[in-house]
Image (cartoon, rainbow, N blue to C red; front, side, top):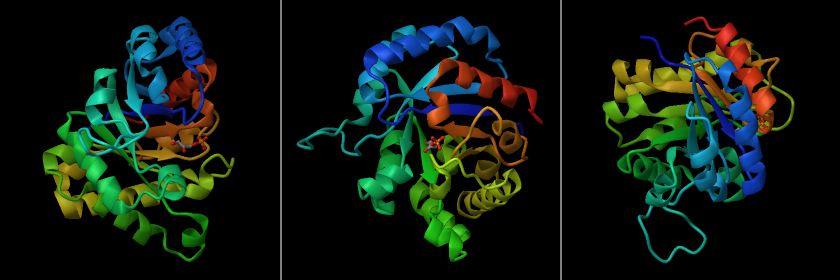
Length: 257
Ligand code: 13P
């Protein structure tokens, strides 16, 4: 079954509304270079969603970087699924390692958020990945298994099929270090195996699993050329329109679909 490859930018806490608008305008000038064979999304700070919904090229979907799982209430500083959906978000990143480590998000909380995003009719991008201590201890596969099982628990096979998972080894994020494409493929194939066990073969074959961590225009094709890697979740290299387009071109050129 052919899974459509995706290029997703996670802007983290970068770009004011004015800067986001400038990116979208620059991307608009370059958008003829974005192949229709791929799917694209940018997850900006929530403050920029409304503007980007108007000025972003239509080929590029929008996502949020986080939500709270409750629909509304006394949760100072949080935003709900309906709030980001209203601003045009189709995706929501859930369980990014920065949220797990800096903001103490547990597997339990991540699971509730994934369920809230699905219930709201958006697509979660569930992030999993081991840190350096876990990797050195040989615990990569048990860690990603636990995070995947817990993150997707309670979802139907049909819901899992629509979901996106991103394997982001914590030590590769923003570090300029990456696993080899072959090593990333092994972990991502294992994640697909876990999903097959828990949610059935059909869901496992449909779910898209991305690689993330120091992805750049010069290494993206290697990752995305692997049979189980369905695209990339990119931080730093997604902040400039030219670099975003260069990654899209490298992915489309190296596509083995
Ligand atoms: P970098 O691409 O900057 O390493 O960030 C990866 C990431 O965390 C995307 O979610």
